[in-house]
Length: 305
Image 1 (tube, helix red, strand yellow):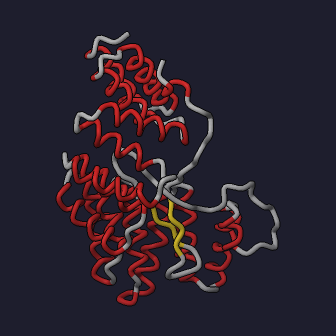
Image 2 (tube, helix red, strand yellow):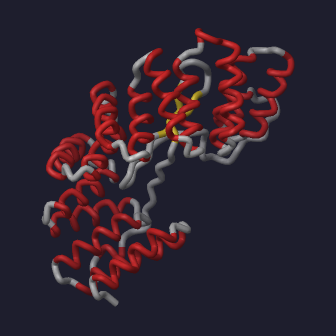
């Protein structure tokens, strides 16, 4: 039995949002890309504090989103710091997945500020539109943000919209710009994931080797590098990367899936079946039925039981 089926239970949590403090006290941004990663920091994961004397910003940071919204509602009604309250309330709505309400607030900001509307408003509006799957409109909003101020955040988020609409060359151009301007771990990882989607496996491998050389504990890079190794036919090396990634964060269905495929290529059918079953189970737990079916179909194709 492979150690992939018996990994440790250590957990490492990566969320989806980036907290910004650019235009106003609060702002959020996220990026996510194909094979896996997401990254970030949002309001605190600690138990919400219930102190009614906290400011709206403090309540937001502590995860008391409804209380924060109520406080911003009061500010807007009283005409106190309306622009700030609208922008910040839109962020809370996004965290609550109330994207239509967020867009309403952002549209009000654009109406109030007119030509003086800062790029962050269009940027966050693009994110909300992306979450509603209104991708052409999201791209238009990101374009407007870019006109006002080119930013790695604009490029990384617009790249996702391009990727989701199948415009992979444009996504690659934007992510490359994002990495040039802000070579963060997540931007570099997302660029490598896109290269894998484009079949640029050697380049993805090179970039992940460079990232791992300086950030050895960033486990998603091992998954991406392992997938590159798999596609280059280096199955044993790929398996080592999947093992390392799963020891840090065991519940990665993609890692089990590609590990299973790698074992199958090495004719280690029992290990292949164990890892593919684990992948299918994790997808099922996450209600990702299409991925679950894909794994089952792959097992049938490989004649694994």
